[in-house]
Structure formats: C-alpha cells, structure tokens
Length: 93
Image 1 (cartoon, one colour):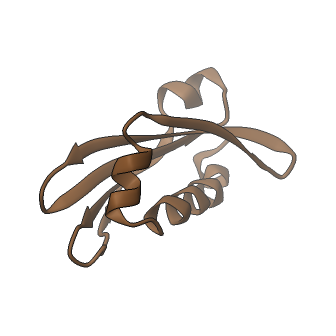
Image 2 (cartoon, helix red, strand yellow):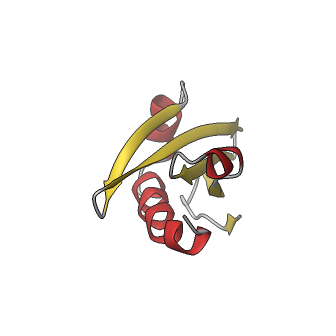
Image 3 (cartoon, helix red, strand yellow):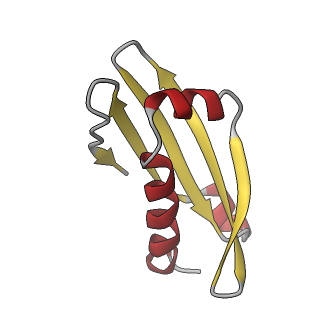
C-alpha cells in the first residue's frame, strides 16, 4: 500500500493520541501500545511508543503500517512533542 493511502489512518491515530493529556499519555504509554485498527475493511498496525518523558515535555511516536513486509520495516510515522504547560504539539515526520 502506498504511503499516501496510509496518511488518513496515521492522521486519525495521531489525533486520538494528541487529544490526551500529558498525564494520560505517560500512564498509557508506560508500555508500548500496539493495536490494529480497521479502515475501509482492512486491518492496520499502530504501535505508539513513548520516546522521552521529560519534566517539560512528552515525546512519542505514532507509526502505522499495513502488515506488508516493506511497510512493517519502514512504517509511515509521526513523532510528537507535547509541552506539559500547554499541550501544544509541533509535529515532525
């Protein structure tokens, strides 16, 4: 599957996790969160990982793949940095 077709799935997953407070994120991401979501009758893997839990921010990654070998080794992903004061989130891919 093309990365362009994975984009709406990644955007939905990012929105779900970005809506949480920093405290919720730390609690839920104490262990990596891997699950499957269904989109247009297909299953996709989403494995959210906490990269950094600093006093001033939370840094985490949201990758999405369709289970194909190439996609699993190089998933479409975004890393997010949420500041604890404002929960603002500049994105980088």
